[in-house]
Image 1: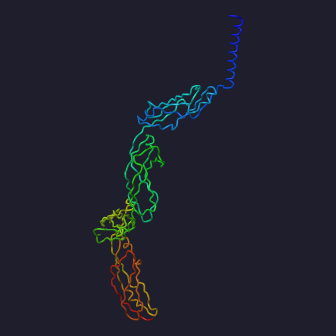
Image 2: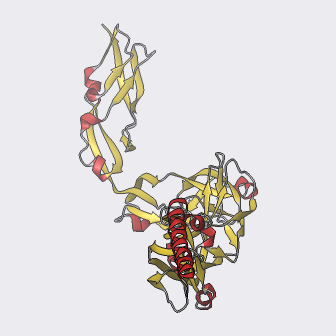
Length: 404
């Protein structure tokens, strides 16, 4: 090879090296390498159908996201959007419970995956179950005075819930709420069903085979009537009913207006009066007419009878023991006539009659309009509660009035 050709080859090689150096310089300065982080990259879930075949559902997380760092030439990086980064989680092969599922990431050509986090995401898988629940009717508001709610009926009486086991177990009851404010006629409505927890909060993401139920509630009138005591048999001759007490003395009854019209009182079931001689307080049943019911059927009615042994007692007096009323101030009573004895026989409960004394009885001799001379007069005995005058002997007395 000639010397000129060698020089020409060397020049070409040198030029190539210079070109490479210049290209590298330009690329490093004009299109440098860099790193960029993309946040909130959505994780695609694959093989979800495998979960469904097992009757499983994802409770958590609601949304799976990761952050990804990529590197490369700036010209390549700026072309990459969040949608170009593929993150996946394979859900096949898992069972009910909590499990960490690995995340796989792919980035477009021209850039390099530097890092991503998290590498695993905690998933919570729950079993889809069915559960039957009765429907509870709840009323709000108040009826007008004088009206009362009857027993509600609901159709259907129960529903079937379907959803994740955790949420189903959170359901305390299925509720149908109805506002009865100011209702005076029977209620017939369709009401939506709510699933609530122990605190009354709605439980969502649980489906039911029935979204509404039909509710019927009869509306009745109320009436307050007295309770009347019914007794049977007779007390022995030496016993007497001193007092009758029924608690409560009145009772609230409920029924349709036509049924209440002819009811002015409620009778007790017949009581053998002799059984109350020793047991003075007795719970009794009430005879409730057909078509009505008690407002408070659990409230007990108690009859208290004060039954005592009856006794008589003789009290011996002189006419001078009797109060003289309306005597003419110009006249006097012959004192010999005032020494006439008489007997007062009284009757009543033993607890009253036994301690009774002569001074406890008030008697009066009324001499109004009587003139001088001899007169036949009667004694007036003032009534005293619990005491009955059975005999006064003699009934009449002879007195002589003289002028001073």
